[in-house]
Structures are given as structure tokens and as C-alpha cells.
Length: 205
Image (cartoon, rainbow, N blue to C red):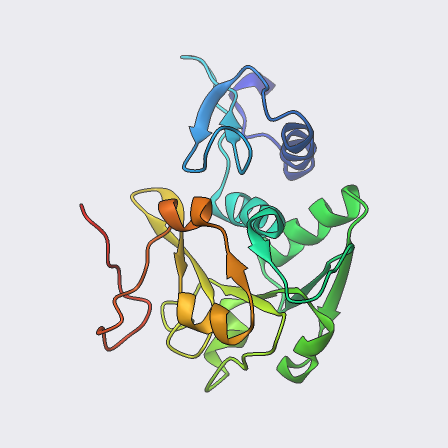
């Protein structure tokens, strides 16, 4: 029966959009690191016989979508422009999610086009081809590669123990005149300033 099959991508996306609109939906919490249902709550609809799983790339896309609520930009931007550089599951899911919520999203063809963005996701494949990530005023850069922060990126979305965690380089964000909320910083992994690679973890186990 279909109840034992993985939910299709379209159905999962519809559920994600619905959950974003209804943060108090009565379901078991799949993921909760942020405070009081204000930030991200991704749920799993499950029982002993059936569970619809949410993939890491889907969680990452919702993260990127919700970061706007916990970052202050130097400009008073009423409407934020999201950008993607490179095509992967995160970029595709984010694009569908933003279009469903009537947000503006731009597909970049070069890292030199960052200035038109407020939130820019750079795929791991594209990041590998870059020697550094430019820091532009008012542009929040997000990626998933372990060298992303060392190259100048601001937030790495890292999978740890089957959960996606944000790893934040505060110094890079400050250089871009971005202020990150203490609520987000409390649940993030903050790299050690003395580590050779900025993406290294620095948190209590």
C-alpha cells in the first residue's frame, strides 16, 4: 500500500509550506533547536506503521528561508532577495518553497553577482571551484561545504548526528554589516577563533 512508501517530493513540499504557515501544528517534533516555534519547526508525521521522513536538504532549505527572521541588514529592506549559485537539492527545494510563498529568488551564474542578493545560497559544487567567498555589505552567504567558512562564507549548514546545525562565522557576518540574533547564536555552533579552519566546531558536548 502507499502508506508504506516515501512521500513524494511534491507532497513533502506542500507539507513544509503548510507547516511554515502553521507553526503550532499538532505533530511530533522532528527537529527543534530554535526557541518557542518562532523559528524553524519541521515535523514528522509518524506512527509505528508509517513515517514520512524529511531529508537534510529539505531542512536546510527551510533554514535558509527562516534565517531572514534572525538577521538584521544594514539597509531597511522590506523585501529580501534570495539567490542561489549552483543547482542541487537544497537550491531546487528552496526555489520551490520561495515561489510558493511569493518571495523573490534569483539564480546566479557567477559569484560576482552577489551584490544583488540579501541571502545567497552557494552549492557545495560551486564552492569547491572558488578560492574565496567575497564578503559584500548586506549579503548573507550560506553553504554546506566544510571549507565554506574558511573561504569567507558566513553560515555553514552541517549534518551532525542526523540533524542539521548552523555553524556561524560571526566575524564574517560583522564585516558584511550583518547582525545575527542572539536567539540564533544560542543554538548555533560557533567556530573557534584559534582554529586553523573556521568551520571547526567549538561547543560543549
